[in-house]
Amino acid sequence: MSQAQQLQNPAADLFANQTALITGAGDGIGKALALRLAELGAELVLMGRTQAKLEAVDDAIRAVGGKAAVVCPCDLATLDETQADSIMEGIQAECGKLDMLVHNAGILGPRSPIENITLADWAKVMQVNLTAPYVLTRKALPLLRNGEQSRILFTSSGVARPGRAYWGPYAVSKAGTENLCEILAAELTETHTMRVNSINPGPTRTGMRAAAYPAENPNTLPTAEDHIPAYLWLLQRESSAQSGFCYDIWPLPLNLSRLVP
Ligand code: NAP
Figure 1 (cartoon, helix red, strand yellow):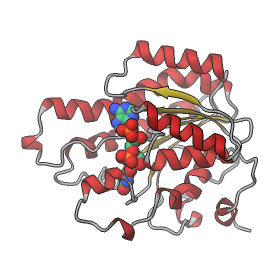
Figure 2 (cartoon, rainbow, N blue to C red; figure 1 turned 135 degrees about the horizontal axis):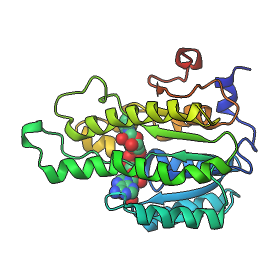
Figure 3 (tube, rainbow, N blue to C red; figure 1 turned 180 degrees about the vertical axis):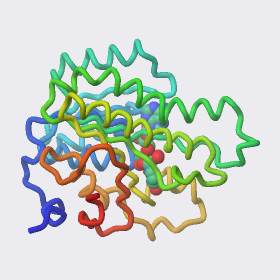
């Protein structure tokens, strides 16, 4: 059986004894990924803006027999180093390590010409999509070094490279994310066994996509669940995935031979 087929029906303990922090875990792709990793044995740290959504995901995890998650409400728009330090101290106390860090949370920001974008809107998108993942990564590295062959996964977008007109700070933040991923992967391969990648999920039936394309029929799009095998491939310990790449998993169905460089 190919690795792609195995990921449609993975071993029930594929992520047993592994801990994953997912940002934006209360909705969309992050929620689907959190539920699946928990089903496959992982302990989850659920980070997101809305506590009630995170608690609902924790309830759903326990309903399928998963381990109770660590619920970590956090507005990435205001995250600073002090708050990141205390989040990591909490994870250290609860879990002792991190095996996976998934930077999934993101905001769209205004879709308009650069000329019309205010500094406040620009700064907010950069903070949530790029600066917060940088701060969280830096502060999480000691915990990731306690994990085994740890994995960091950033989230990019098809509008990042080449930059697309009217996608403003969102596109710039995603291009920066890919660059951050490449730099970090190159630095970490010198001394550690950590795998650092970025994923572009492509068009997905979520709230963000509906906000970006309000006239589109969502039923024509893949669901967040449809993308989960690709995420499992990038996150599992033993994988043909390399480090330092932006994996563009679109179009479906998942074809790993297309992705392996
Ligand atoms: P989504 O359904 O809008 O979910 C985004 C998540 O990010 C939500 O859980 C949200 O929390 C969280 N979030 C937003 N702002 C936050 C903040 N300030 N602090 C903490 N959490 C915050 O989006 P999605 O479509 O699943 O997107 C997931 C990732 O995929 C994003 O990075 C996006 O750029 C990328 N992506 C998506 C598509 C697509 O077609 N959907 C395509 C390419 C790339 P709340 O629910 O509490 O607000």
